[in-house]
Image (cartoon, rainbow, N blue to C red; front, side, top):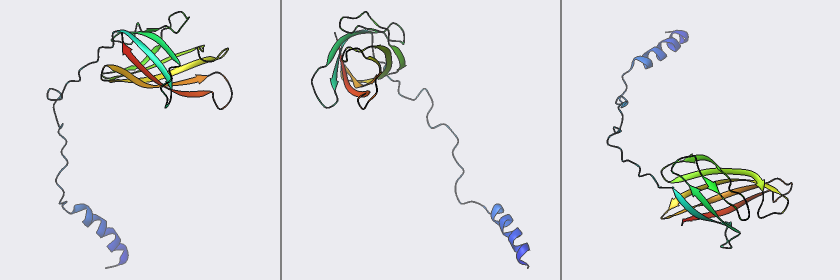
Length: 152
């Protein structure tokens, strides 16, 4: 048999051979009725938020946060300021992501800041991280802060 004929026959033979592997299971592993239901967190109420430097317990800022159980109606009031309405980016069974700003910074005079906070439930507290982006040039224009909130 010539090499050309052999090169044509081998792929056909391999394609026609029976596979020893069982067919893939295409059924759904569990029905939606059998999946455990997530217990939703009750975010509604007033929380006291404390902001600390990463790796330290020094409180830089404390303010009230009024929360609801949906993405609307949230308000935070920084010291000496009018209430602000943060944008709730994500809200699920145990975590919340919110953006706020730009607004005049409480921690840095004459600088505006925008913040992005991610918090999750840990016991009866919300804990997480806030990324502060200051409208300035330099190495310290982005700061990572620890955030903790307790219900009042």
